[in-house]
Amino acid sequence: MPASIHATTAGSPARIDGRASYDKAQRRASVRALVLALPLIVFLLSTFVAPIAMLLARSVQNHEVPDSMPALAQALNAWDGHGIPDERTFMLLAQGLKQAQESGQLGTVARRLNFAQPEFRSLLMRTARNLHDAAPPAWKPALIEIDERWNSPEVWRLLKRAAESPTPDYLLAAVDAQVTPQGGVASMPANASVYREAFIRTISISATVTLLCLVLGYPVAWLLANLPAKSSSRLMLFVIVPFWTSLLVRTTAWYVLLQPGGVINSVLSGLGLATHPVPLIFNRTGVLIGMTHVLLPYMIFAIYSVMKSVSPVYVRAAKSLGAHPFTAFVRVYMPQTLPGVGAGCFLVFVLALGYYITPALLGGAGDEMISQLIAMQTNTQLNWGLAGALSAYLVIFTAIFYFLFNRIVGIDRLRFG
Image 1 (cartoon, helix red, strand yellow):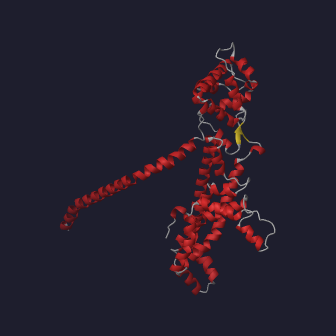
Image 2: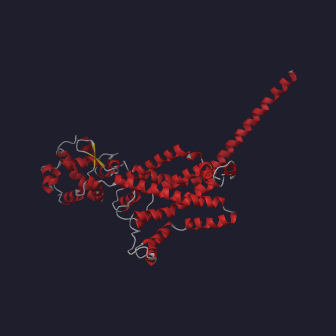
Image 3: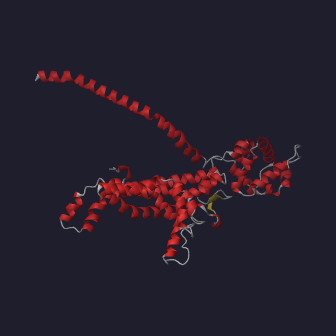
């Protein structure tokens, strides 16, 4: 007994040293893996994460007026917002307009304020052109004489809001809301409401495309998983080749096929199935056809990868116990493929939320998705703040749908093939 105790005691330092050596080797391996992955991490942070973070930050930034007219911005922040400001604020406005005009920033300020009120640009430009070098006895009546709109409390209220940063204005505008003169939040008029309908339309189109891809993709995935290897490889080519083709090429091909004088309408007319061209393009039908064709491979691959791991033994056992083939398929086989169905539906749905090219080419006036409105704000309107707010809501919606899908089917626990 003393000998065994002595052996155990003598072996303890060896075990401790072995554990320490193992931990040290693990740390070296982790550091080596981190060093190898560091270039990729830096690349993703600089080209993907940072630009997205900068765009989302634009949704609350309001730097045009404070940067170009800092003294005026401070005065407006101290103003209580009732009536029109005092003489000093009018003087700072005149000085700020002169400074912004000399520095070339007046156009930027005018564009920012024009987002709040379309006639604000003409107001600023006209006032800046009519300012004289000699200071008048009083700036307040002088500016009102140049343009009567400077006597409007609403104009000054909008200017005050443009001088505040950070601001909720862009986030409110992205859901068709605005700040009232009393400081509350109210919905935009029905004839000016655009973005809430666009979000609903985007979710509706994405859900419909996801359903179509599931209905069309599930049988194809089943064939790929159950056909002999040679036949399955040939069928896989029909799925992979379109997947490798450029998105723009595939969408343009549908543009040719679906137009009134295109191939599909010509075939329908030749068979006597239609006397007039069927409207297949510049409407919701064209959008659904084009997006389903582009996103269908994602659904097929997600379901196929899970089906390949499903053993046929369970279905054969169910049949041997007297189950009808259809019952065995529905009650035994399909539940095992639900993880792939969930992953495919989530992947297709999220990709469809941000689609741009296909709806732009095949859709009509009432089929704009939120991505098209974001592109319009960045490329045409140059309203990066509103574009950032719309993008922020799109990111939030995507995160919400992820947690919903994950709650239902457990996406983060999926195992493929």
